[in-house]
Amino acid sequence: MSALPHTLPHFRRMRAMDLDCIAIQEASAYDFPWTRGNFKDALDAGYDCWLMLVGSQIIGHAVVLFAASEAHLLNLTVAPDWQRRGYGRILLQHLINEAKPHKSELMLLEVRPSNVGALQLYSTFGFDQIGLRRNYYPVRGGAHEDAWVLSLVLIDPLAGAR
Ligand SMILES: CC(C)(COP(=O)(O)OP(=O)(O)OC[C@H]1O[C@@H](n2cnc3c(N)ncnc32)[C@H](O)[C@@H]1OP(=O)(O)O)[C@@H](O)C(=O)NCCC(=O)NCCS
Image (cartoon, rainbow, N blue to C red):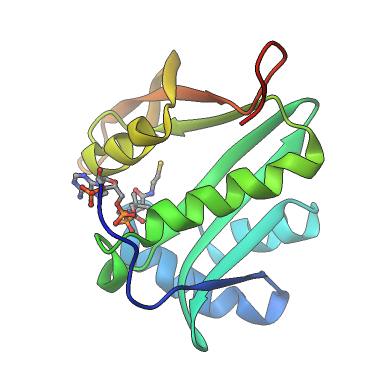
């Protein structure tokens, strides 16, 4: 497991004034990024939208939808220049911590099977594959790629909170 980064990040909630910056960061990290409008919709809908910062620089963002007893992780992104330094792990742990007051029993997410780095990250947290959505994601050239649905137990009724 990678050591903690030398410079620890802090977190704050996303605001409308951040949307232009987030859309640029998102576009730098994905072939098929969320749009500025997607993030605005998430903010307007009251989803948990987080920024991770080092100093005043935004280096990551994430969106979680809490519904019923589940925390659905919709977006988890570290800016490319800041990847592989331990920040993705810190951002994901922050989201898990934030799910506790919601008493979410599960964290759910979709991921491309080709996204080896993300899969490795989720695996180190103990996420398990619980499903598959066929032809869920677009890929370059017009074809589609399946999504794996992963789940992490946050509250085990037998063992207490994670
Ligand atoms: C996935 C993502 C959030 C990981 O963030 P990160 O800051 O690079 O991750 P970390 O440095 O905290 O890495 C934690 C662990 O994840 C795994 N990991 C992360 N990136 C990896 C890669 N490219 N290849 C292999 N393993 C990787 C490793 O196990 C790593 O631990 P290690 O450094 O001890 O080997 C980041 O790569 C990202 O934003 N990618 C683009 C957007 C994306 O795909 N988001 C996920 C959508 S489901």
